[in-house]
Length: 138
Image 1 (cartoon, helix red, strand yellow):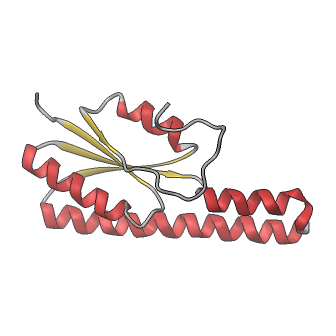
Image 2 (cartoon, helix red, strand yellow):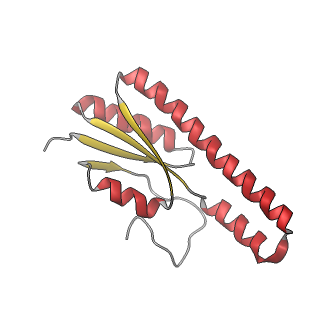
């Protein structure tokens, strides 16, 4: 089976750059097209922080500042990943497609994965788990 199209999902985690490098190495070895998918969404800690604030434990002004800070944090992570991708492209001499979307990763990643021969994800090792909600495993 040929691996023509690889998709790697990168998030705000510290392991995202490593996952991207591993995917690039695999793409280089198999002469595959590589797509890097980033989704601008809040991580579990940021969602928890927002929930606590919205439950009345903060003023409207404080909530606005908190949401602005979270968005800036997400953008900083995206910028860091885009920069790491440029390094990977140079290092592996690859042409990589970068996709950065707004939404929910557990919905968007499977939609894009349908068009790839292999989708590279990582295990969710976050300490915060929810009993409800859509996950990648579903």
